[in-house]
Image (tube, helix red, strand yellow):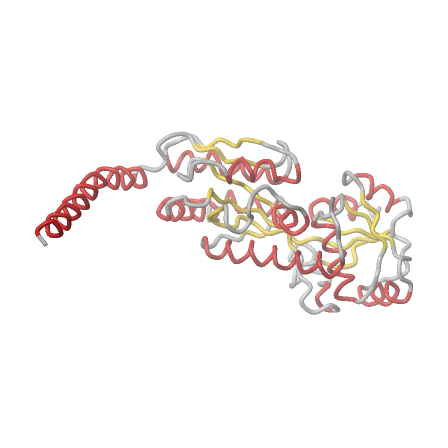
Length: 330
């Protein structure tokens, strides 16, 4: 009995000593969160410098630096549709000093290829930045004038309508496959390695249509090289109010690319919350609003939960399309 009492007393003393030893560590962690950032912060972009996503990241970085008192540096780690950059951030120390800037390619990758990270578990999302509607464009002499006429032709003549994309598994490819899935049609996919080749072939009459970003399509539409048929967002775009949404013919059709920012899973919630507050404040500035809207985006500030729902919803949508259409990306 006496030995049992002594053992219990020893355990209590041991637990107390352990708690006392952890108290300085907990206090240090609290200080680190309160004083964040403690050193320069890297914003990793999985795409080459000069692209639209890189431009937006470089608009935000100096403004974050000014507000938080440490340098925020955009670091490009391109390759594999953004997966190289995402892999790097997934393995980083979860302290908020390594962030990830993503686009719609992140959710397309998650649905079409096996990534070296878990897209749903390995990141804590901070906020959406902007969303981008796409536009369905066709060659000038393409017979169908409306989405309804296109759907009828693609159903009646499987494989006759040819569409191009920047590659199997790209958002532009998946947008067309979603169209086929909802319309009950079968168009012929012609994949390319870049964006200029399919556009040239469509202008030359060798392709019938493709899905493009509104920003990328606008100069060619103004020059009347191609014709716009519909917008891919659920609602009419204020930039092209004359274009009807695809959803008027295919209810529920909604394809928008996006950009957003996140951190490694396990990053302290107060750090995520502070970054969210600062980014939302920056995105409320009239200069930033003009820069982002001029680049073709619709501002989408919100909560970390908003972005988490958006990313998971997009991944689920594209995974359904991949399964229904039997898309195989090697």
